[in-house]
Amino acid sequence: MIVYQIAVTTVDDYAAKREPHRRAHIERLQGLRAAGILLGGGPSPDGTRVDLVYRLQRPDQVKHAMEEDPYWIGGAWTRYEPRSFAQFVEPWEMGPVVLDGSRTTTIVEGPVAQHDMAQFALIEMRGAGRLHLGGFFEDGQTWALMKTADAAEARAWFTDTGFWDDRALTTRPFLHVL
Image: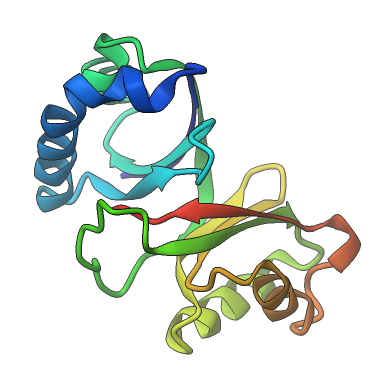
């Protein structure tokens, strides 16, 4: 299995463009989630970007996963960029689906200095209830969905380990829907 983080670009009038397709989109994603294919996802609070995490068997399944989505077909999504994780920390549990935008979390991204030790740090963050899921790409970049809306707190969790340089990390808000 290959786990992908897929960054999706949305249209300028995303909220209006997605509305007629929202029910079909959510139902499809809930089905993929129940099948263990979709591990998490949601939009940025401003609606300019969506992040999805899929578990697929083959790289050619990314196109199917994305281009058969009602938001893609309906024109709410314009582009997507998949990245496969070289190392991935699975979520311990799948939380409830939250559609009202009330579950604001933080995505942390950036390079890691010591890959092996950093993976243990991610596992420890998950055990402490701080990390939902995340991992490392081949180029050494980290992508992690943290269980806090406080970007400074999320960033500190990484830098306090000593395996990430605060100056190289970026954070951004995320509405954790699935």
